[in-house]
Length: 121
Image (cartoon, rainbow, N blue to C red):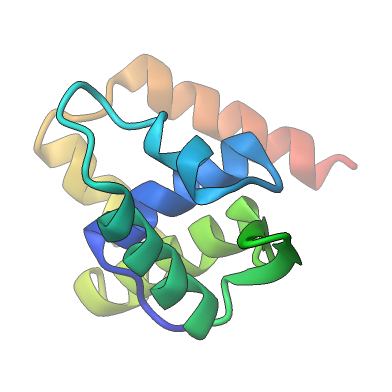
């Protein structure tokens, strides 16, 4: 799975929320400083080229549909972060966040509960 730029990721988040959509619909998802239609169209074309979207012609425009599920992309991205920054150890990643005080004891206990529930299935 090819890595996405920040702009491509942002557009994909909009597309995952919208489902099959047109560029003009994606443009409306941006905050006040909306990029030009042509910029969004270029980003969408890059996503299509990278295999994240399929295009279906409707008259003189295209409707884009995600080919990659958000969960699949998230899982792959987190896996890359763990592999590249935490020596392929989720324990190291959680330890990092605990040391940086980005995760509380209560949140860690919730994670433990989730793990235990998964093990009991």
